[in-house]
Length: 160
Image (cartoon, rainbow, N blue to C red; front, side, top):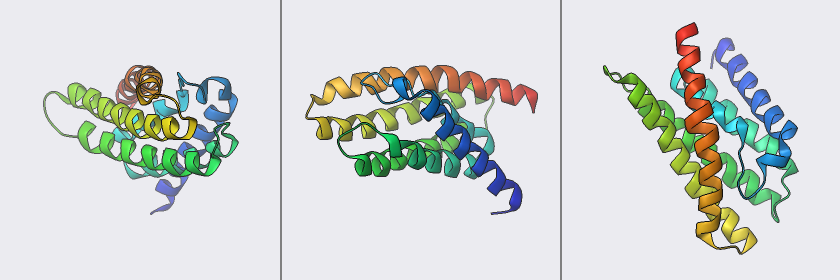
């Protein structure tokens, strides 16, 4: 990675971790509106630095997880962020006349990945019904990724 990409990845990691830590009361609940996940769709614009940054940021921020297994939360949460941001980048970055639609689809794919992965391992860890965690994580992810993240992508595209 060149210096600019390392700096961008570091910035994304730091932003992600700070947002989770500052907003911890809503970042670790059943309906977890993890505002930091709004950074996941930025991989559509910034590519690898964003993918790497939100993955590392998740590792760092999940260290304070109140869940029964911090190690599982660090491992599976960061895997979910990696896959979600990578797929958002690939789907959202498809070139066509309908780029805004592709970007929204990229956000939706990221939401689905995070909902499925995070909801599943949290259900196993807490012995709570799977559908309850999928619903809770899904609602929070729609808010943070599909609403805030998508709007962030549109604003940054206009500024670039």
